[in-house]
Amino acid sequence: MMAVLGWLAGVALVAGLAMGFGVAPREVTQGNVQRIMYVHVPAVWVAYLAFAVGLTASIAYLARRRPGADRLAHAACEVGTVFLGINIVTGAIWGKPTWGTWWTWDARLTSVAVVFVMFLAYLLLRAAVEDRERGARYAAVLGIVAALNIPLVHFSVYWWRTLHQPPSLLKPGASTMPPVILAALLVNFAALALLGAYFVARRTRVLAAEEEVLA
Amino acid sequence: MPDNWGFVAAAYTLAAVILGGYWRMLVRKERALTALVRDDHTSRSRHPSRPGHPRPEPASRPPLP
Image (cartoon, rainbow over all chains, first blue to last red; front, side, top):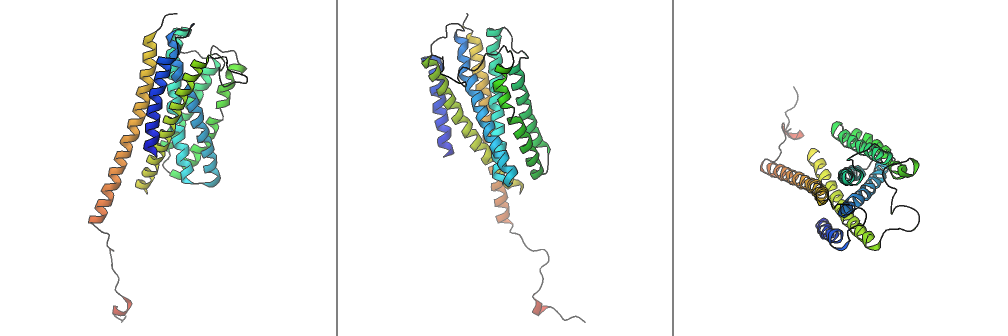
């Protein structure tokens, strides 16, 4: 099952690259640098999804204290942090030729950096607390608090004046995006989502094996 | 606007390096754990556990003075 998921993700990634570089046209105002969006935007969507899974699993762990829920929360938050890191790095690379700067402390970038640092702290906390049950409990609370900041990241472009543009897709009303660019974005999202699911499944298995060795 | 292919290449390369690095880390961890579990099982089957101080059956115990 996991191998199938991995192969599916691999095939979807190839399809995503073909869509982003072969099918989608050169964007009129930004030029080819806009192609970075086919990894930048899907990466943050996958990170949001992973953190939502982490949030749900953390609540489930606090309610029932099942180790499986804790392992899922740990894996999902770790994978979400990896994808959020990709989002931040690719955004900075896109920002330099487009905005003229790698980074600016506007509301969107600052709030996303805060969430990223919170999830790094989550992973450090996991590694730092020796008592497994206590570490899981603290991490679940921090995971919930960190994930609750995601709406702040999303709506920051509406609530404050920012250099970052408002969302093109995750907003009320119809998309104004050309269908071919939208299709490229969605194929890349599907590819990264499959890869994210594969990573979460594999990380959960590794965590279970670690617990078995330590027991 | 210039095409900035260098920035596009840098973004995709860095994304690939991060994802590939994470995947490699998972594979290595899994391999190390599998080897550890296998070694543990092998050593247990070679040296089965024995009780340290076997107690005699009650009937064979000498009566107290």
